[in-house]
Image 1 (tube, rainbow, N blue to C red):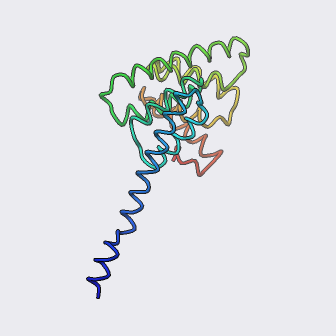
Image 2 (cartoon, helix red, strand yellow):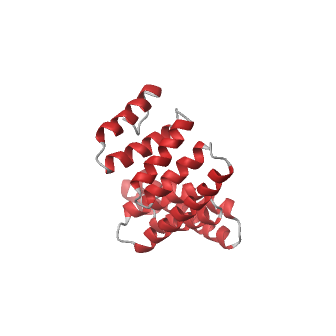
Image 3 (cartoon, helix red, strand yellow):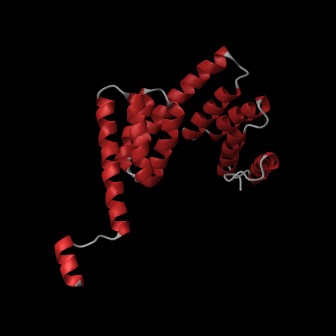
Length: 193
């Protein structure tokens, strides 16, 4: 009886295989819809599609498309984060580092202009510190991140980034002070832990 059932109804696929096929199909739909939206000048929809595709599958090419859209829409912070992920995923891909260098330069320029307009803007100092760190200028990165923290004491992201920069410069005691300050404000902060 089992033979006839499988013969007439076809083989039943396992649920995992079905889910993988569905995920792959949805990934491709989102990726190609994002590419079409990008060509049609709809960056908002392209970002949504690429983000959905990447939630299903970590794909270097899709990340590259998304980083382009982020840069086009001046979402430099998001582009920076994505390009850093891409650089870790494929450390020999030269164009990723060139694009990252360009984003760091744009971030630095934009942050400088924001600081000229409003010296006391903690976010502008944070972004400039981040750009400097992306350009391997640890001392200037720490200087701007310190300024951001002085302006906004509970600026967790600035403290985390400054701790990273301090660790790169082997200033472990100072890095520990930043981590301790973060944990005193939020004992569950994953990145600090």
